[in-house]
Image (cartoon, rainbow, N blue to C red; front, top):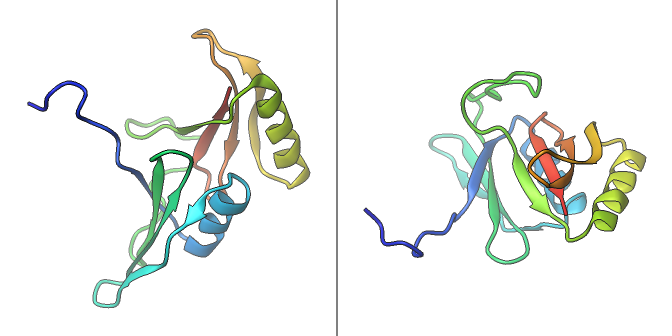
Length: 134
């Protein structure tokens, strides 16, 4: 077992059909910083790490033989969403207004959830659900 307090999530990985489009979304819509493209010509695997404030990173990955595993409407065991904290309720509301103006799919408008989060839910270009939380 690992000692308490020594574990941090290093990154979350997401398969993408259109790697460049998804990377652009995480950089331009969410303010991430993209690392360089990694390519493995033998396997056809390609990926970008996109970094956010602090140590948070998402690895966006593609390979020709891997399709997105589900649509956003599916509720299946596994990763359900990634949450991005933007600071305040006002920041959530402002982000949602910008997303709507840019044509980003909005799943749920800002609201306070039963567990006390103030959040909105959007989709990235491939239907992955993202929570925008205060």
